Length: 72
Image (tube, rainbow, N blue to C red; front, top):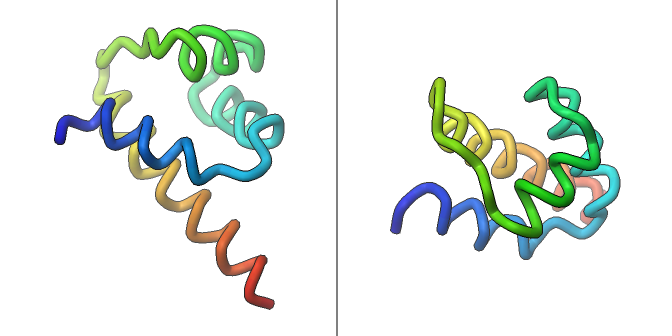
């Protein structure tokens, strides 16, 4: 499975999409609306500067924190 497909699979597990979009926008220095529309609706994520790898790791970390918060 390539990284973009893995990101899509992980994204399905994100419960608070609005918060996630804002955090992704901050982390990757893009507008929140660009994250929401271009990255996570149209899946237009260019893999320059290792963005797929970094976004994959960021999403994994976010989901881990999300799941830990649910168990506390």
